[in-house]
Image (cartoon, rainbow, N blue to C red; front, side, top):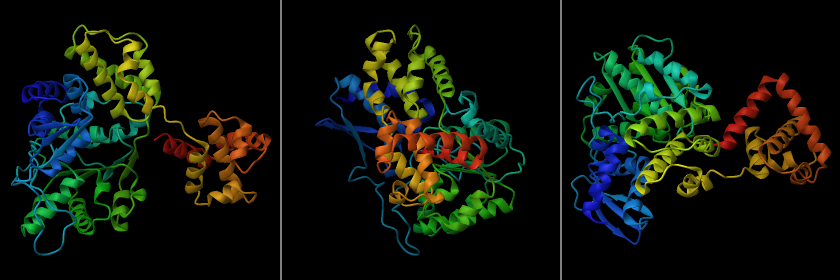
Length: 461
């Protein structure tokens, strides 16, 4: 791998990620070496390296494999030993949770105060490019309402869901819309990790009053991945006071996390309570129709980037069926497919799709087991697994047992006798009775229906 080849890859990445993300995250990377299949890049800060690793490493590795004949198996990002931007030990006052590298080269949102650098916005993440379906329609409507810039009846707006379901997309879309429609507002979008780093830097430099004044002067504060501050006492303390100060001034707060406030471990109770007092919206795992709509939207965008490249009927339907848990993986698969077809000069048909995406398709073939279902159900109802599988007929054990049998029948390919064996050697007629009973109850008892849906989503995630 030569510097010239890295230059070619950078141009491909510029087309893939857009000018804004390229300038903020890809341009600062310096290719160092390729040794034994590991490509090493020098980065100016640990924060930037971590961000690129999480969000762009797969795309970088794909392009490096294509240009190097498959010799790259992993990419690594490190701060050079002689870099002036290496983390320094904290000094004085309270001990912060982590060493603080200098801020990554990131552009602030153009609205508001230039003194509060936020994370860069991805130009692809707008409302126009957000595909709406039943699993995300409430989250989309709430985000649209906040993006109007007026007073809303809920504060904060708390968006949560698994990886790749659209939380960050909606956060960026709100910021872009506010920037366009309400340029008078001081809007700051950043991750909880960045909030902590800036807090640590203020502690280290003894500028806490400046930090407080800056963050409490915003009109709209958007914090992504708030679960990151859980267990970090000093940061939680400052976040709590910032939150209260902004709410008291009727300033809007938008928060995202990978789970509901009540499910974030090591989050202070007072913060959890505050987060739950607004509108808490779950972005559900996508259904088939929504995944197909997302793919169709992306294809329209790629037709401009790859003119003349044909995609056969049935390919999108195949991908929407097979890659079901993560929109980010789904979109990444389509990106890889178009790039590969363009490089080899072939149309996108089913054969090329299966060859190009064999690793992604294998990973999506994860089979849910009866044992996994049993563990999830016993955890959900807070009972011991041995009690659920044992002979006791108490309602507290019998109902979860029947729910686990129902899920085992509907989510695995196991036969009724096989399921019975895994439930303490029960007869297949017992399993059949349990399945039938739950089918009846879910139409009568909304709580059981809700529990089944929660368990199904947790198992499919």
